[in-house]
Length: 291
Image (cartoon, rainbow, N blue to C red; front, side):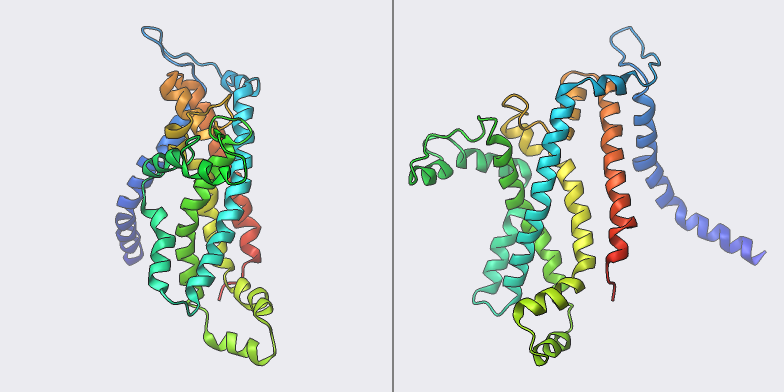
């Protein structure tokens, strides 16, 4: 009787969280999967079951593959570079540095700015002829470049913005982890004659691995989630050079009102994130040293 009462009590405590989880996570996922199997309702024509036709359409869609390729380049570039920059900034501000508080604030400031505001700031930076970036390039004779208007440079210009904004956010986690490392470990490494780089490689980086895993998960989600700067700055142009997968979903669902195809694209995005998460927790997590 007591065991059943405890089980009932525990179930009631979990019920609010379970309702929220079902309402805002599992139910939308199941609804999206179901919608991907139906055509888009238009006017008086109701949605009809089409099975896997939306996924076959996706396979034959060149814009989808372009968006996937762009997102792959975007993720493989922004994730390691923003994490490496965040680690370097954290190591710098964790040292005995004059004006340490001001430097930390300067590093973290881009993080608290809304992405729409950041995009508008960088629109001015990237403006041809009078923008800050173009004025700098004029020193080397490369002025007059429309970086957001050329297919070869547009995606790279967005990548720079993402790294600039995300690195400060990741730095906070690295800084907190660095301050949790026991000074005795660093002193012991010094007594053994280890150089700074040996201490960094053999002591600091292994102890930062749990934080690195946490940051990498957030970075992967961010690489497939950020879309505000694409909407504000390029809208996927030129020639879909900056079309990312989430922007293509947004464009398909709310620009073309093709909700069935947008649902199928969303399912693919969820599968990609799920596979990455399984790899991170199933393989990478086993390589992490937890204290």
